[in-house]
Image 1 (cartoon, rainbow, N blue to C red):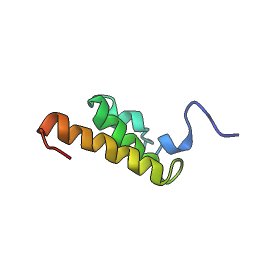
Image 2: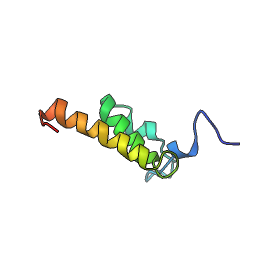
Image 3: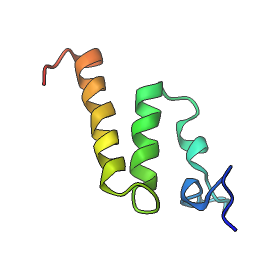
Image 4: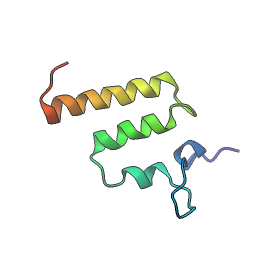
Length: 72
């Protein structure tokens, strides 16, 4: 049975210490839009596919608009 609270797609990668890293370890100190875009990029192959990539792009565009004053 899949763990619905802490699924495998949030446990990607390994650091030099040999410990598995979870998405949370990467994003815990980032602004919300940054963290959310990374979350969608990390999990797209295991969960949401192209929809997750589109969600990540949406958040990245918001960062460009809000922080860098770029227009779409």
